[in-house]
Length: 243
Ligand SMILES: NC(=O)c1ccno1
Image (cartoon, rainbow, N blue to C red; front, side, top):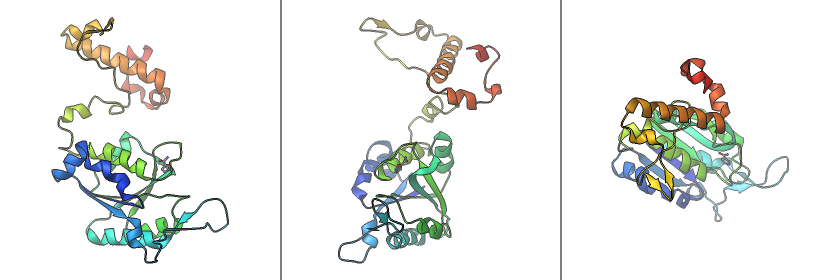
């Protein structure tokens, strides 16, 4: 997968050189390019913003630098219609389902807005050669798109085959089956007077699976009842419907 990120703070994306994503880049699983938006300005001050038409607080990111940056990126990979992700509190909400969907894409481009946002005409212009998707991490506001991109690239990148050492670990994690993950424990079996659930020492895989599933259901019902409500009833066995 090719990924391009455009930002006025390219150094903000340095963490993508670390850990699993960094190794995936070294291994050639992820072809990630970070671009400085100011490289696409031509004035002495490398201006990327201006006052909003209609008044109001703050500044708006100018269209031309974005068009030059995105046009340059699209020209570098002419064969494919990239998906342009624009992190924004006004976007569709990012979740594991969308992460899996985007992990299937060949080319993702991320536009990190700042200030009050990007001139809307950029998204209209970009729709000629990109599939444009404003995406939100959640119902809160960040100062820019960079932090959202770090989160999304990690969530998407880890789903690409070969990035995570053991693909099994992707199966039993939160949201992989619509539920939150079960509690996990490791040695010592007694820690500061607290024992692990005895069933986990039984070696009885059926009982262990039942324990884990029950705790997934309880944890999800307690912390995210919205996820339970969203699941089809066929997701639950007859006995589970009363947990
Ligand atoms: N909620 C968000 O994803 C966001 C992105 C930029 N500002 O807020």
